Image 1 (cartoon, rainbow, N blue to C red):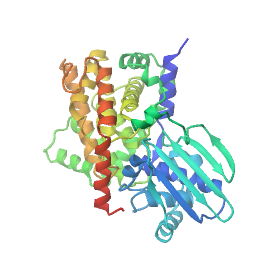
Image 2 (image 1 turned 90 degrees about the vertical axis):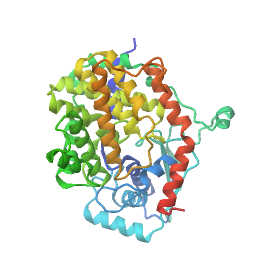
Image 3 (image 1 turned 120 degrees about the vertical axis):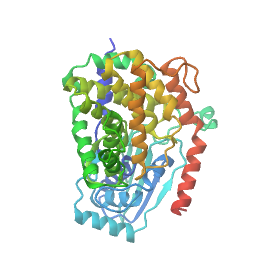
Image 4 (image 1 turned 30 degrees about the vertical axis):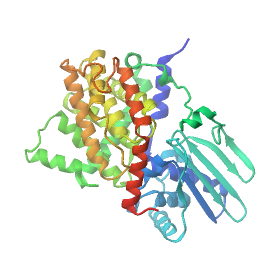
Length: 441
């Protein structure tokens, strides 16, 4: 008999994990570290192919340990001091000497990064050549999911997803064949009811994300990292321009953590569904609620589980990366569901909070990972609280209102269709604009 509760716990274990630095350049650094380990000698030539979404998100973001921005320094750090066994904390072990060596490598060695002609959201291929050896590494679908490893003529790993054939009909539609997942067959009520029946011991690790993400938020509040969105909200609250309420607390914590993370501060965060900023957005508004209305560990862990799983449920339809801000359309919706559950555990209100979110922030674009993300996370956290509060009062967006459908699951599928299919051209234009701004040819 199918054990849905166990399947959901397994998803949480796979999707909620620590990450150091913005997940896209970190994933590239991870692939580069693994390729260098396989090569086993000095690199003579390198070529790195990345999906357009990876390229976009890695272009302007801070990298932990250095003041340099972007994918090239992440590549160099992966080559110089990365250890692939550390996964998405691959850059954590680099000391100051290795960081300086990486900066020198970036300045003196050609690093060949090319956007791949692929519809996959997460795709990284690293090809290295040394004097005596060659190595190839491919990551696909998830940021730490190796699908192909090769050293010289020996294929060390091949899951069958690299160079996978697609049928002509799918190719003509310019789409990717998507494997059915558990999230394709579940629904919001099933997720919530199974989380309610989970044992604390099985999901207690989610509380580690509270500590981890609060620590980086505190750093942002104390040190005015990045552009200082969280720090500015804190000052505004102290000066009386903003109220000392739940919404302000959620905005302040979430933005401050993003300020520090996007600035490249060398502190890990608990990620959600492949993104550190998703983790901040899925966790910290719920922490803000608990700060104002204290919860015990079991209630807090279950609210976090709902948040992460609803985030994953939405990402299943919008795609791992897309033209829309995943924090705005997915992680904040997860947070809204988690807060709504803490308020009264009413499934009607939880669904209403999700519908309210879909009616609100569904058009927020993603123009890459950068300092300005803190502003979007502040808006996302604010909207999550707002949507949950309004839903608790019994006010929900009615069916057939814009992209809101007859049921919450249909609304989520509609959001996915708009985000994935409808905004493909938008994503291409965003990348073109960013290239023009950064003079990347």
